[in-house]
Length: 325
Image (cartoon, rainbow, N blue to C red; front, side, top):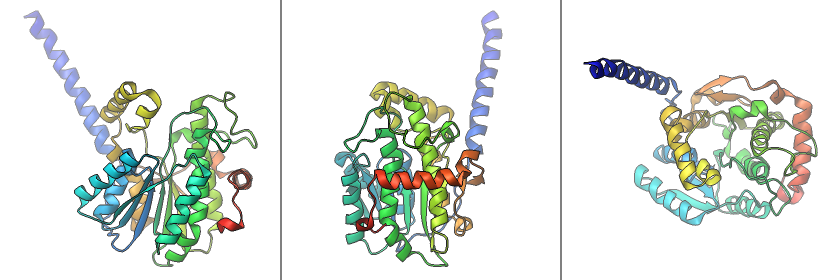
């Protein structure tokens, strides 16, 4: 009798927990746009796993030519087969891109410029959570992969984006940021010093820089047929944790986040919305979360910092006239 009485509250608690979890999942924003992308070309960095893979699948199902990019050939080829199988779209291409290398980023961009006649959508999605050491280019891995690499890539691909966009159908750039930009700090000349800042701080800094970059790029794109927006995908369980906390530890973290927060599919929805929705076609320089426009941290709207960051980044990645910047 006692055990039965104890079981009743346990069942109620479990039911309540499941109810709360389901309600939370249903509250996440989902892209409802049915826009087709036939004849369009999209590039998704980190499009071989996690949110990037879900974004690439969505674009392929809409009929786009999808170029997925990452530094791991096996993962890239497996992802390509996966996307083709699920979408039925044969126009899926894997290209090698290591954002931790300026040379690799330049080679990737040059390949795109030489082989593609248009670029409608650029998704700057690839990222890592932590690596507090320097790349061969002298930048923190987290900063270069999450921010500097995308800064260089975007600038190199701008000519093609500009040539593709029209007043009625503008090309779109989407930067995948994070709520952790709220704790990010931009300090001129002090963003790439290992050991001074925690790995989490470097990650937060990189996401703030992505948002500042979008603000300055938006200003520079005024009058063109290209828009740039940023997204906060929320807390998502992806393979980023396996790469930073090991296979088993990362898998456990990812499983917990998938269960109680967002799956990669849920996390991809706001990026897809910013990339395809008709309601966003004339919107630029904004931040979205759960498929709705939101305000970023006040530091994102510091125009002086955005301009200073742009100039500093241009020097660090050695962006020059040869790069058609």
